[in-house]
Length: 115
Image 1 (cartoon, rainbow, N blue to C red):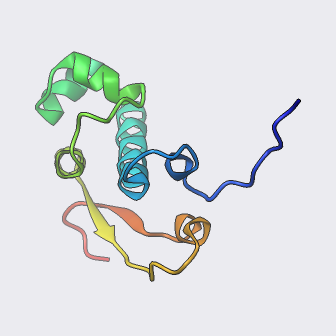
Image 2 (image 1 turned 180 degrees about the vertical axis):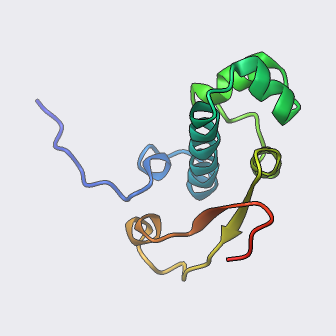
C-alpha cells in the first residue's frame, strides 16, 4: 500500500514533526545564506573557518547542512563576520506557515549600508 503525498506546510521541519520547527527553519535560512556567501567568495573551508572564528570541521558541517549545534545567535555572528546583517519582520501567528515562508521574514543586507 502506498502512502499518499501530503501537501507541505511550507516548513519541512514541521512536516517532519521536529521540535521548534520555526527556529529550525530560521537557522536553515541563515546557514543557506552563509554557504552561498562562502561559495560566491570562493573561500576554502580553512579561509571561511578563520573568518568565522571556528575550525574547518565546523565549516564542513555547516556546508553539509549540519547546523544543529550552532545557536541562532552564533549564526547571526557568522553573518556579521561575513559583512552581512539580518533584519527581521514579524507576522501574526495565525497566518499559515506556508504564507509566512513565502513572505520575506528574514532579510540579509550588506553591513554598514542603510536601506
